Picture (cartoon, rainbow, N blue to C red):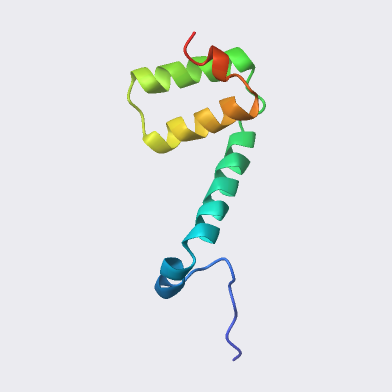
Length: 80
């Protein structure tokens, strides 16, 4: 049987030599995930962000919310 190639899988050796491309892929995935929050109204997104910070939820979730806020250019309302 022929061995399949999975270009999205990175071996341990490749990760060390190609750190930048992996980081770019991670950033892209974050913005893709953040785009899933589009149905939320701006005020609801900001409310979820404030509550997540107050409740000290996971940093990954807060980063996702921050990315969505940045995509909508709502940074000026983040602390309001």
